[in-house]
Amino acid sequence: MARTAIGVDVGSRSAVALKGSWKGGTFHLTGYAAADNHGGDLRSGWAALRPAFKLTRARVGISGRDVNVRYTRVPEVPDWQLRNLMRFEVQEIGDQSGADVASDFNLLPRPPEVAGEDVVLLAMGRETLLEDHIDGLTASGGSIEAFSPASIGLYNAFVRYGVVQDDTVLIANIGHETTDVVIARGADLLFARNLSGGAALFDDALSQRLGLGPVEAENAKIDHVDLTPGARHGSSEGEKATRSVLAAAGQLMSLLQSSVMFCKSQVRLSGLKLDRVLLAGGGAAIEGLPEYLSAGMGVPVSRFDAFHVVDTSALSPEEVDLLEGRELESVVALGLATMSSDDEAYSLELLPEAVAKKRAFFGGTIWLIAAAVLGLCVLGFKVQHSAAELERVEGDARRISKAATRAKSTHEATEELIQENQELGLRVDELYGVAGSGEQLARVMGLMDQHLPRDFWVTRIESSFESDEELGLARGEEMPVLTVRGSAREGTQSPASQFQNFLASLESALPSATFKTSITGKSFTIIVTFFAELPDSGVNADLEGA
Image (tube, rainbow, N blue to C red):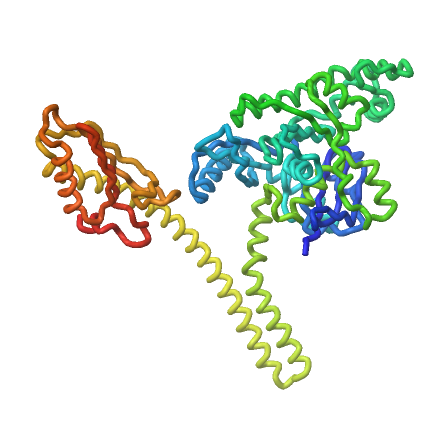
């Protein structure tokens, strides 16, 4: 059965919350709420949002200056090494900013143009921003499931509710102060970013050019601005308002174009070319904006109609009317709810450290305490029915409470030991490989000094960590491999025969080693490893005898 999920998007001008579940290839919307944020900050946005349903385990979208979505290109490494790399990068960024940050990462689909590397999408958010959201959510009687960048919610909305073809699409959610941008090729996510700048650019231009206050500027933007190229304005107010915001519209177009250039450089897709653009968010409703951007960017631009494939039959008539007027503002919240309800959705999940620890506590240790509480309740019930056994029951309760405390202490100590053992295990593997590489080199060089034919000489020796199925080294389990290249002197009699005799001497002296050899004319190559067996299956016999 599909899990019911809640997506929330609180911005500086509006707040949206919706509830539903993804099942049978359709999202079934069962609750919707939206409100204007007249205060312009998170606190006023959460205060204005009063849904008829409880915001239990809500997924909240985050954006703005306190959110950083970035790319990292890394070699193909095991998962534990990737986690360490990301942890180091987050720690470095946190140290530079002087603020605590929550983070999460996920691999992106590898483009055909990229070979031998993984592209990692890393999201970070200041814990102060997350805590402000949690305060507002708690005041509304809700609880947090996770925070996700608004751009990732936008991507999930496109994949599930957009027209996905084999083309390259830029999807932009234009808020009041920020614009979240996603670039997808087919269903594959190439790029996600949050930009400073949105519909406020138009309000500021109207205020500066026409001397309007904030409310009058927003009304003029809605009532009079028409960016449609060649549009005929029905009044002088419309013509003045439109001329006043042309520079702001150009700024917004530059933001979108710069995102494409940044994607090319970050993901190294120099041949990337947009095929179309979809607009969402409150700013996308500005009259003529799609036509203006289309003329400037040279590709079709349209508003993102995400809700035409969403089942809204369970909503009340009032909720349906409210949604119809705010569909563009609700796309991110729809994508966030989809992420929580659909296990196959691409996801990034951020949590403040305190919340993460609390969740871990309630996921494990709390059951020990619950057992103790249950025991106390049972004992208390018996006390009410048997005064003669009161003293014995109280004694049992005290013992159970102490046992729970000891169990909790033991549990925490065990977790610390497990973590320490894992870290030590990684260090042991690394040291084992380094020591084994040196021992392997020394053993082979010593035997070559004894058995290498007089007319043979070594031209190159390399020691590296590699995987090779022919040598019995599985991928992802790289081990030391020694490569020896050499040649026979000109005129050497039967170099192939001498090489085979020499190789037989090596194999006899190193019975547990694995060899790959070749000789072509006078040149020969020997590739050898003592590590054909995994480290946890026992130390190689050649190394044990050293």
